[in-house]
Length: 388
Length: 243
Image 1 (cartoon, chains in turn purple, yellow):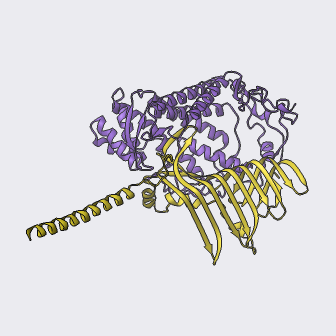
Image 2 (cartoon, rainbow over the protein chains, first blue to last red; image 1 turned 45 degrees about the vertical axis):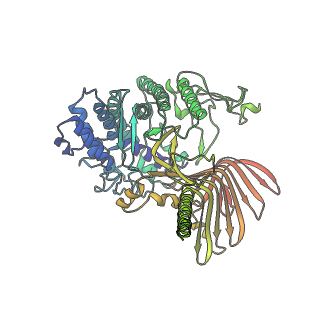
Image 3 (tube, chains in turn yellow, cyan; image 1 turned 180 degrees about the vertical axis):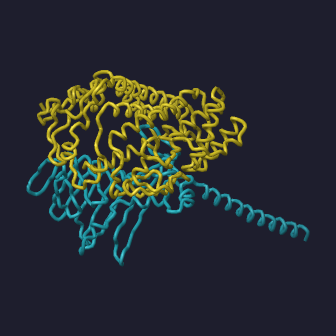
């Protein structure tokens, strides 16, 4: 992967993360509703029409005005507010891109057009010459021209993700934690205009996705990811070797005590496994295509295999775990990992191979700091262990 | 006389009843035939598929000559699995036992214009520049995010001569960037009888090249070799993957 592609990939990832910054915009129409039921129904109507921003305003009003409501309407409001505050992006400029406190600031710094930033029918019409000529809300993929010279640096992006995105995700998590296990609601989604049922399994899956994103944000916070992104992206002759020589601290651990962030990330990932496993169990009790999320096409062995892998993934967070026995009786070819070393603080820069251009050399530590326990080439002699 | 008249009346009545009965029976049979299930007995249906087409083919003729064709035993649109989770409106299109033929001109560099995988076929179902038309086309189907081939055979001809034969167990075309990942991939250059096998390759639609980042086995009339990290174009020119 070339440096340019790496940054385009990072750009897409960051855009997706940034898109979670759903700073509320005021629609005003929610004030016409005097009851929780009206707010919820109006929110679902707006959502079915693809007007996510307006739907978010209704659900926000419902959650704010009826915070302790324990009815199904209250659960519906909390679930869909969490859902729409993630999907309902406010991309508009606040007129001050210097403080980097909104998604609009990032787009301003990428020289994106001011118009076309409202999501209507799941569509965006803004143009971003440095990122893309986006005509679709879900697409940042075209060949970019030059990224603006004042595009945020790696450190600025890290700070933005940690200080702006993380609180929004944590707030969505609070909404979801307030939804009761009896929640169920039929709603019409704007993608295929069909009605499906959402229930507590959907809550668990969405909660797992948010916790996974939060774990990633906490872990990136512990590393130096600084680079002048526009310089690196705009350098058409850039290679991994050049990039690493220009950014000598990239992927090193940040100085100071970041153990809280690492432990928080590990805790979140353990909870992701718990939530996904619980979601599978819940879906198995009502597995039909009438539900928004289901397992209908999956066989029992596939479902059991998924649950086993989730359990292995969780176990590997704290100790040595076989994650793939390759379907053989022998344990000699098993892939065994131990991710506890990663969460203890691993200098990833020290584990990188030397690069000539974009060509990597051998790994300095084939165990990746102790993470890879068995199953590959643990002594790094280029011959798989099972052949020795 | 009355007796004869009565018998004639009964005969006439019997004929009318017979004709009427035959008509009703015929209509009943026709109705039965209309409601006869078209699928074979015991065949599994796909309850979550908004579209299933058994036996599909497509031909593209340019300048009076064949340019592109594909056929498949089955085409279906169904929810895409994320892990084991299916999110109903997010779909993928699958072609089972797909056979593609691409005809390149013997003159010029027609390989630079070729779109090997018919990604436009499925994306055209839900794509439109008009937002209202797009919303309408998405209705009932949802968003198709990728095209999947199960058991793919792809033949590339220069003029009428078969030059490249490609086989893959599975292929996945990302409908956003048109990149196709092929699993269980084998590419054979027919004129030189050389072929390359690998577990995974990627068709870069922009560069018009197959990328094999991992290990591969090459077999030629001169012998066999192993390696990793190469690029192969539609003229079977092989280059190092990394500069």
